[in-house]
Amino acid sequence: MKLLIIEDDINLASTLARRLTKQGFRCEVAHNQSDALLNAHKHLPDCILLDMKLGDDNGLALIKPLRSLLPQAYIVLLTGFASIATAVEAMRLGANDYLTKPVDMATLLKALNADLNTQNVSDVATPVMSPERLEWEHIQQVLHSNNGNVSATARQLNMHRRTLQRKLQKKPVQQ
Image 1 (cartoon, rainbow, N blue to C red):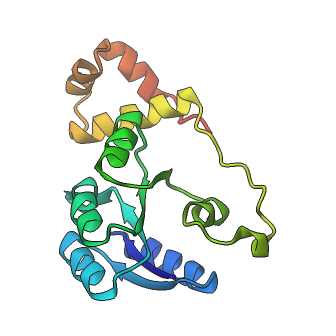
Image 2: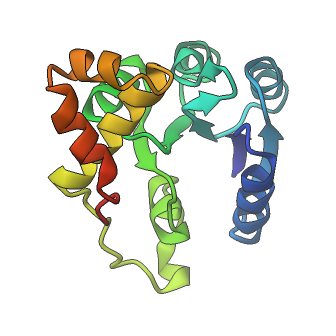
Image 3: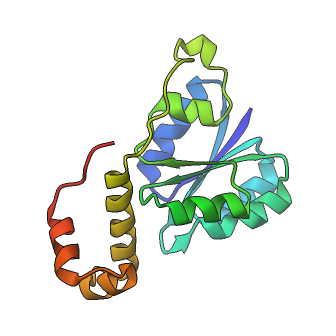
């Protein structure tokens, strides 16, 4: 199976490529939007791992062109800033799956429709994000989009600034 990994973090991309190659995938790597479209056109992958944040670009903008170029490809969006809104938007644009980083190999293989029976992890439960963790991830994403401006983030979240500051002082809750 041919796999295109579109990830701006060079170390993560090479690690994913190395591990997925061991699982039987033929991996190509792209680190930006133009290289991603060029590689997709050149190699015609069966599966695509797409990072949501590609430097200053948004990976969501790549879903439609990739989908029109490769209508049968299985597209998995990876993100470190998970939110319900971006998950819905990714699916609406044509992604097949949506995973949060860090992602374990069993979950990734399951998302890529790999044969997990050979890995003895066929009954691995996909971790479900708790509401508290989901809220924390969403706050972090909105804060990042507002360049760290707490007041603007509080207004956008329709939350009192002091309440937001208290939530930001807490450590992120685990899955």
